Length: 468
Image (tube, rainbow, N blue to C red; front, top):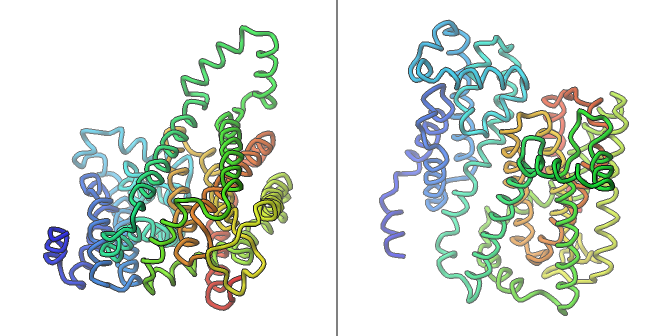
């Protein structure tokens, strides 16, 4: 504890910290230079120090966003003006494959690669450079770059900032909370790694998929069932990872719900984690959690999805429209039934939640479905080796939304787990059902404009409407 305070006492001034965050974000995004910058570690440490010193959160996010935006713009300018010399720069002249993979990735995914590449470590310093080399329109690049930087900065900076702001309270955990926190953290990490591994193994390039191919060919009935799974159309892979996710999530939800129903009230871990959450009642953390609550409620999800649903209707993508709307409808019905079955009271019930039960968390299940399906459909147009990044990005977006429910005290921790499992089941069902239609819908929607419309509507919802 004394060592921690001593280290914090050596930290730079708030103004210098903002300069450091700006500089690291810029250098990490800069062509070639970013390869040698341990950006995640440096930004996490600087954000933690900023949080401990009480630097305004908007200033920190502004510094990170502008740094990342400037770094990518500078890389784009270098690619545009030095395109004939780039391949001769060190270390690209010694590793030409790095630039070739960046060019291949950009040619395959266009504007989307600027967003996705920002979150993929090996690709981040090259995509803006390649975009400039291949003459991407400047105006389009600036818009895409700005939107992606606005998302990137919170993802990379907020975890460290929250840790710095809450460090003193975390040093005085309630009895037993350490065990539950460690168990939950390791379980989430292990499940994420296990899913990532299984998802790859069950793809067409995975060893487990090839082993199943060989095994299924030996049995008459097994071979017939395996063939039915893989067609039509024969060139499309059946989402075996989604089938595995459906089965495991369904089993886990049944077991978890049974455990919740057996207990009369919260689980043993719920009380301890609730006590810990009560110790973290900073104005900034409560305010952030309330904002996330608005984003994830019925009105927030409606305005977020409205531009996409309307575009699907206009573009006559009826299969995608029905599946997306059906997923949200199925989720709403399932949450209502589960809440009536469990009849579990909330830790705290504000006026706008009067009459609403606690288990499972509808916020958690809904954000898992929305973000999870987005990641799944984005991953299907990405190279196999990069698909895991889409799912890890989805996890990083879903976790803060779920944890915000603990901070404002309207859910137990076990509610979040039940909600997440329910959301995964709906995601898997939707993905499996949509598999037969995905080939005809491979053309990308105008995601830049639709994303901007969703962002504008969501900001208006947060600023001008109360929670529902």
